[in-house]
Length: 152
Image 1 (cartoon, rainbow, N blue to C red):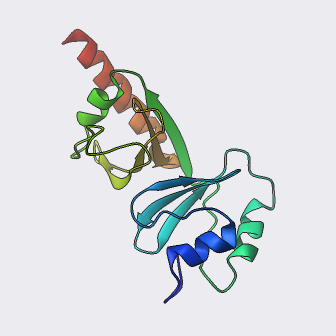
Image 2 (image 1 turned 60 degrees about the vertical axis):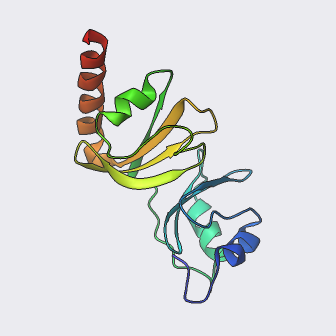
Image 3 (image 1 turned 45 degrees about the vertical axis):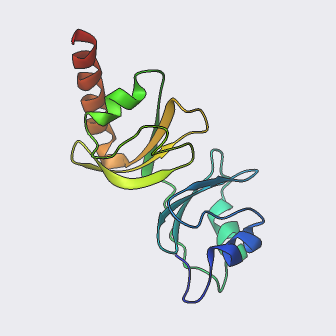
């Protein structure tokens, strides 16, 4: 979370990448940042080293407060022609690409489970970050909902 009077651009300069100012994803060489609220972002790294969070904290010293969430989330990728239809069964957002374009982020609920949802660069794919303890519940919901949509 950015400290008072520190802008997204200030943090972006410290990280050497464009910063999302608002609910968007920004992708750098080894990290993605998701705008999750005013002055707040979730940093993601597919293959973080042991000292990744410490390195990030050093770059942002004096600019932002950090909390290591390395083990907190599971990220599901839902893709294909029916991904949006599946998600629309549980989320109260319009996921049409004209309204929710690639790199758009939402902190919301899907089937009463708190999530961070973003549309991938591919227009028919979404990533969903879920607290690890809710991953099984989300998987069960997605599986049951997909089966229902196939039957319909």
